[in-house]
Length: 300
Image 1 (cartoon, rainbow, N blue to C red):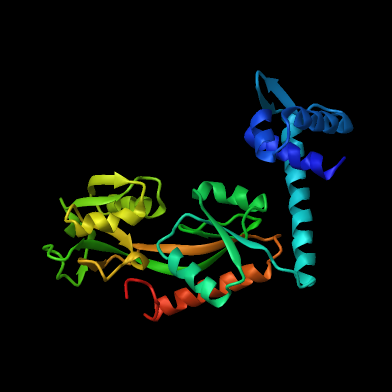
Image 2: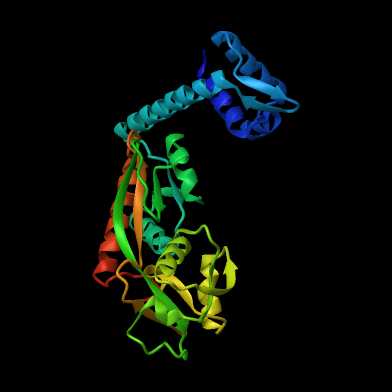
């Protein structure tokens, strides 16, 4: 059994199509098919059911996939650990996020402190992050809300209050604090259901007997404050998303449960590179300053 066979097998299992997997691996379809066939011969069992042009893991393949992913994960951790001990460059810091309002400030600070560290960031739904970490595709995930599994470490790093953003001349702009009942028939703009902050707000509103009246629901969180500033509606936004350069007022809530918890996730078995440790330090320092009102975030 060869390492290449395991790598090819995992990719075909992930995609479910030999030709598409071959394109991603930059090999010919016939070469990939032969490699998978040799692996099945070595194991003495078939790993896939062939359905037209597609393939699907059978029971044997599903059992073997878990072992193959674990083996590749451990080999990659060994490579990274030896690379770190040799003093070689730690390579690219791989990040996955599902919350991005504070990301420009954090990455800007990381680049300022450690210009030699390269990074690659991908937006990803929360329910895909555990699999991403288990495949060894991310050093850290920056997430909200929290979740933890046996092999996934979840470190709470910040509790972010949710505030209401309104146009500067709005009738509520002068209020020091609000209750959810104050929202009433207020026209709201926000992200679609499925985003962590939106789902949290909807749940708390239901508990308070309030039905939010959304007139705009999108999938670009960065555009929400544009709509508020234009007078289209009010919006629930995380405290870290406040931008005081805008003609927008931000009002807190009396409800102490109206907060967003932000965490860093990592696989417990993953080797923590020097770049990953430095990223974690930057994140911790950023949110420590945020709690003390000393961030360099655009809102200030």
